[in-house]
Length: 203
Image 1 (tube, rainbow, N blue to C red):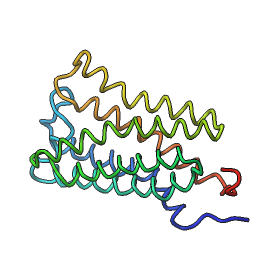
Image 2 (image 1 turned 30 degrees about the vertical axis):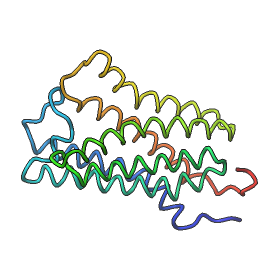
Image 3 (image 1 turned 90 degrees about the vertical axis):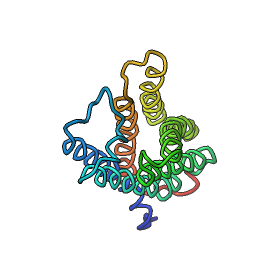
Image 4 (image 1 turned 60 degrees about the horizontal axis):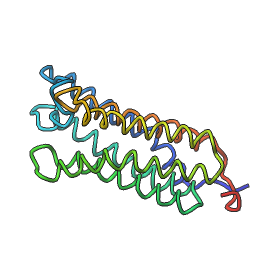
């Protein structure tokens, strides 16, 4: 019977680990900075605060981005045999690189921080829409629907923010969009871990 490689298992597990690292560090950073406001701040404002706040926040984004990169490269790319899935995997990997960039280039490093932030929140739903098509080609209807809904959930907070500007800061749309994407990586990472390897002809 075909066995999964170490790197494939690492990639699949990384989809579960990445959100845990990211949100743990974000919440620790928020707890360490009482002045933070969900409605008036951006999450990235935490990255320039002295003490433990900034380092913890930036480390969390960089480290989780590294795990997402492993998830995309060793998990998603291996899982999809069709070219649409390969493109979706590479786009998801680009999303991970953007997340790592946010952690490296904090808010005071202009214009790179802004560019990395925009890239992350734009590429996240785009990659998921592409992966939706890849699931459809594999006739995995339930996963296609779940991924489509996740992509919509990741994009909607930003669409609403630009349309009605419901908060003065962007922490809420940032958190909501990232949470949607994280739920998908955890669920699909777990699904891949529990699924035995498939022969190439089934891809």
